[in-house]
Amino acid sequence: MSQIQALNDDARRQGHLIGRIVAFLYGVAAYLIFFVTFLYAIGFVEDLVVPKTIDSGAPGATMQALIVNLVLMSIFAIQHSVMARPQFKRWWTNFVPPAVERTTYVLFASLALALLLWQWQPMPAVAWQIANPQLATAVTVLSFVGWLIVLTSTFLINHFELFGLHQVANNLTGRAMPAPRFRAPVFYRLVRHPIYLGFIIAFWAAPAMTVGHLLFAAVTMAYIFVGIWLEERDLIEVFGDEYRRYRQRVSMLLPWRKPA
Image 1 (cartoon, one colour):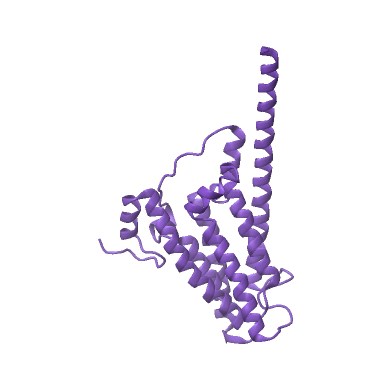
Image 2: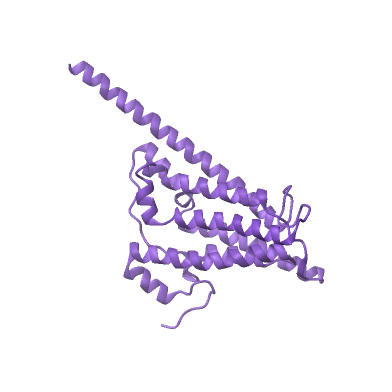
């Protein structure tokens, strides 16, 4: 009986190990999909290198393009917001192992973004354009600074936890995730949401602003404010008065020091 029990225990341990390995590989694959999609999105917005950009392709009917683009952005916004809420996570982890919950969120967000990049309808009429070549170059550089702020800000708080790799790596080694700890490093001492600030800079700093690009920037900015409201509500739930004091001390998006 003891030998049978030992064999069963070994089989369970092997099964758990295989499950952890599969979860880790799933996390790595989801991260790579995210990273490729993110790089493509930079080229898409900047109208550079990639096969399909925000302004490329044959334009169709304006109203059709408007509806399709709004639907695409709504799909991304709804997925991004709903799956990030604690209530959804508590329900979702009844079906998805907690170790891959964040990975699954990242994968779904990447697929929603990929759908937007693939099906985006160009609206190439020019809303405004900077004629001065030096100023146009400076604005383009500013846009890339925005992307750099986005990426740097993720590493300041824990890039690999944000995109699910930390969770699957800890699961693979049998370690528990550390308890959430509030930190405000570097950029986070200047504004509460440097990632969102970086996106705003990247989207709006365009030397030639087409109607399609303007729609993308405006709707995204509106979503950012909704996202901030939802995110800060969750952060207050987790960190309580510590986050309330931080919110009183540091401005939301514009880097100025709030009065004491």
